[in-house]
Image (tube, helix red, strand yellow):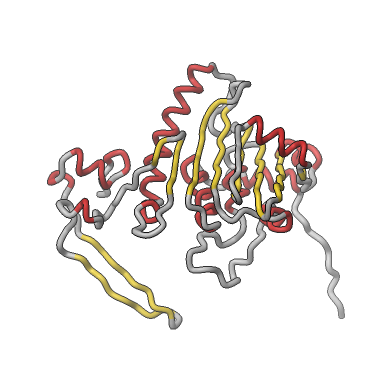
Length: 283
């Protein structure tokens, strides 16, 4: 007896909208994009959250990493492009090949990626309104003229290699008709939250002793938050008691290290701000 095989590919329109509700907020979505830049060996990462000339919120993340060729960009724009069972580099922060797409879709209707490698510019756009309307996984592959328009319009420039991720129609950052004063205030509030989040999440990369990453948000240098006060500049905060041990799991060694921090009442505002996001101490 043989079994019948049927194709049950999920409808694009339904799945794309479901992916928009996976649970990201702006901070975690941007952090996923920065993860990709770090995995691409970037030294400089810039993030700009602003209004375009049509008073729409636009977010642009650019890096000077390895960039992608056309084959690599197609893979990066494909949902589930990476098998989580595959061996990865020790510094690879991705696992499922979903982060770029799901993080972007959670915040915007239009995702454009323009990248440069081997002196070749390549670009592609996911338009979620188009996917929903056609119920088809149709990606817009940009020609040279369209790429040039994006570069000029967004004031983007490349060095030898790198990648820009552009979010437009950011309907999940704000909803409904609002005025420009509200939008500018919203951008200010979200930028502050984003700065605090990035300074904490990526503090190890920003404060690396060798080849640290330079992270800019709206042209402001992101200063690392050191939650365990282990940097020399925080010796007056850090505890002298440090727990460290190693365990074996599936023949792999796992190092566990813990720190004892003083109670928040023992620290002044300057010390709290140096190690905590927006001065919020971890209780």
